[in-house]
Image (cartoon, rainbow, N blue to C red; front, side, top):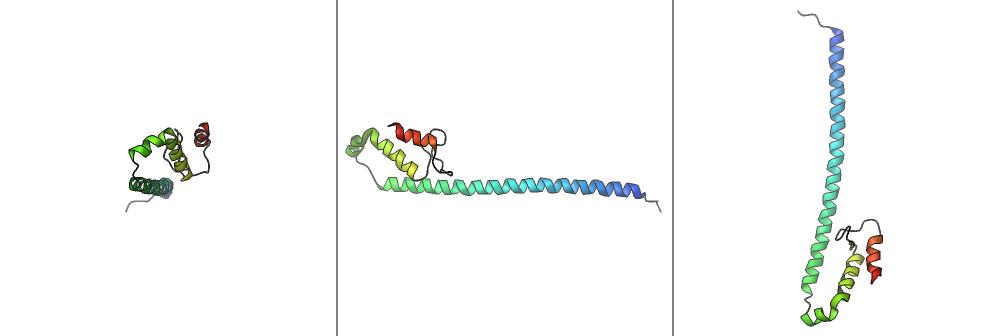
Length: 114
């Protein structure tokens, strides 16, 4: 029977322990990334749902050509204001995204320009 070197066994066990520790750290990072992606996916799902509802509402309210011509540019700003009040960005940086942190200075500056 072969003689077992105790020092070699301890060294091998330590190496395996380090590998397990490293794998645990990698698994933890992957778990955090997965949680973030799931949260982002839910956010995008809700944003998409709200936008689809808005499109459906807008499609149910047809505008005649006369109303469209009469409304002109002012209606565009009214629509932007309404979108902003519904919780969406109207600025060129984040247009169409849901506002998460209250008012956006860029959006507000667009609304107050005209």
